[in-house]
Length: 310
Image 1: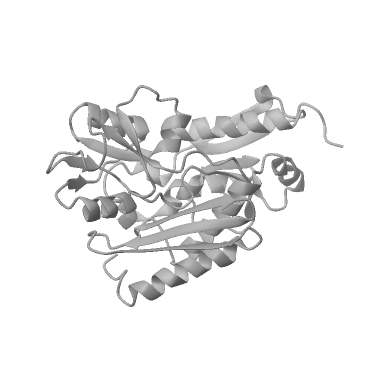
Image 2: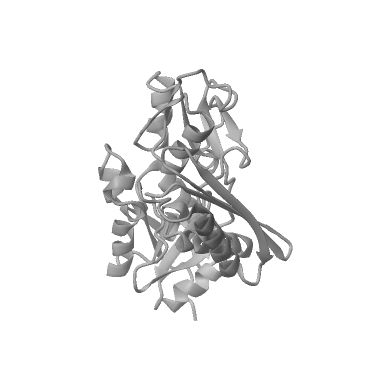
């Protein structure tokens, strides 16, 4: 029998966005499970290697695991019961002993342009745009080769401040993050996925736990969003087929309508000189197959050497 007023320890990064995501998970768990009161849910923060490295290009330093390793180690040590992650930061394969036991309902998957411009096309010729994402950088170079694209690091607030202070004319961020931080008065515009395809699993929060912790797994089943799980599974299968990491400019977005999934995928040369896209449809009963199929199609279209410069 599960005891009432159980305690739960959540591991996460310490950034404002990571804390907002952890609190979202805590509130949802407490809402659907009367045994967990919010006051008994503790959030423990961990500084990851990605948080410590505030200069340089992350894609050349270590990729996706830079923002998850220390949090996952806390889980493996037993210092926490669950870990809350932004799924676009997660490596394809979880460490031995850990599983993604729940996906929270997906937020807006699109990018948002921060700055005075009303669209990408509206940016002045030669405008300076900051981004830490190789995907965003490559797409911007493709559609606006005149722009000066530079790496910008730091949390969401830091990047926005650099635009406000005039260091950059604009930056691109995830709309989901802006919404979760409650930033409603920014000069910003949502970018259609027809213009900039999102990162794989953008806007998705994943909740991880030990695969042997059956009680916690059962608890997390109550907050698992089936539609989001289908989208995440499709997109991660697509990324896996391409061997994707933070080093590769890959974009992908799955949508679910009734019993059908649509998946749009794209690979881009880092210098923006070539983009290859594909879209296919599949059954919600086999999201892995659809993701892998689109990944294979893009590999065939790219041919040998497409990723050599990465």
